[in-house]
Amino acid sequence: MSYARVLCIGLVGVEGHLVEVEADLSLGLPALVLTGLPDAALNEARDRVRAAIVNSGQRWPNRRITVNLLPATLPKQGSGFDLAIACALLAGAGELPLAPIQGVAVLGELGLDGTVRPVRGVLPMVAAAAAAGVTHVVVPQGNAREATMVPGLTVRSVDSLHRLVAFIRGEAELLDPPPDLPDPAITGPDLADIAGQDFGRYALEVAAAGGHHMSMLGPPGAGKTMLAERLPSILPELDDASALEVTALQSIAGVLPPDGRLIRRPPFQAPHHSASLAALIGGGSGIARPGALSLAHRGVLLLDEAPEFANATLQALRQPLESGRVILGRARGNTEYPARVQVVMAANPCPCANPAGDQYCQCSALARRRYLSKLSGPLLDRIDIQIKLRPVRAIELMTSSAPAEPSATVAARVAAARASAAARWSAHGWRLNAEVPGPELRRPPWRLAPKNTASLRTWLDRGSLSARGFDRILRLAWTVADLDGRDSPRGSDVDEAAQLRLGDAHDRQARS
Ligand SMILES: [Zn+2]
Image (cartoon, rainbow, N blue to C red):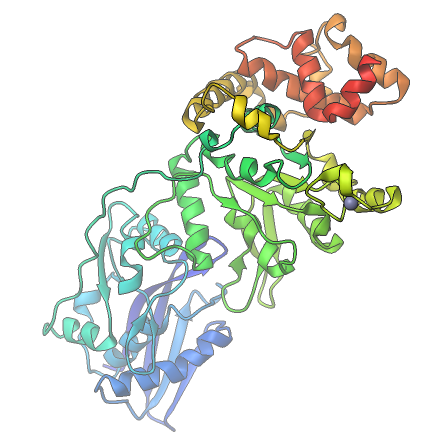
């Protein structure tokens, strides 16, 4: 036999695709030719496969070898094809019977010594294979647990090419995936850890219930980061489809722990303000890595010290926030990753970030204005909740009698509020209040009675509230009402929403 074919899986964005690896050996000058749109890493497969075969004690066929990856139109990236290429090549040379791995998808990168190394993105690859009717897969040992997350699939793993070759010849066994570990207790940060800061806690609850983006302005010590870190703890668990998506993105990024399991909690990402655009949005060579934006998909993206981010970086976030996906331009076509995130921005009121706030701040009014102006514009426009926080005073910590409410209690209220919103909007295709376009809320049947929006209209007339701000407050008012179990917002809900939008400064102005 001088021809053989082995099944493998490629990855485009977050989607796996079955790939057939064919090898043909013919007479002629000894050479190894790879065809079928290989990228640079795949070209290097030539050298890896040759060394691995020789160092596994197999004979290298001294013939003209053509390896072709099908379908040719599919862009292929990464090093996961090595193992399938080696098998096809040895089988084509007549060294191996292929019957034992007929219809089995074989995945893995080869080291020069013949060891099989883990690859990124095994979860989405294996899930796609299962969806295409494949029932058996062979994956690197380091990816075995990840592959077992896909139901209805028999997973075997290998540590070396030598083992796979011996298995195919009936001389050795493949490795079983490691046994399931008991589910670990959920030990994320909890709202019970935060004393005082009632307004901040309430704003966080509204953000979770309505899916609203949120910004917090306050001096260091106000607990902005602590609050933001706890937003995932009051969001609902991910459903099956979302959990698979989120776990797959971590797998592609190569950040899934080897003992990992399906991720059920909404993820949290807090990129540093000095992070590169690639770290934030995604990129890199080979299979493009998802950035923090996609790793926060279905979860929370915290931009801490937001004015410190480069302008270009903040601008780059705009389009993905609008569309819910990131498109990375690549030499061989674009890669697309989902990025549906809830954004939390945190900022100090001035560049010196003096812990004592106003008291010791030497910054000029101009410096402060310039600092915060970076937060204005199109990005901030999308953020419904914009609050100001004061530092927690020692007296609040000492006198608070009741223990702070734990995340689980808040999460239950959030879930109930989300259910009410989903029931109300389901006919229109929205799930969360934050998804409802502003003009809709100003029209019947959702328009509120004039007496309930009296204060807002006064501010509009005075010019202290923009039309856009008006819409944002209406949206928030619906979430406030949902949390309190009311069918529609009343005047006090609108006032409460206004505080979440305008902070304390406006509140004062409104009272005066
Ligand atoms: Zn200052």
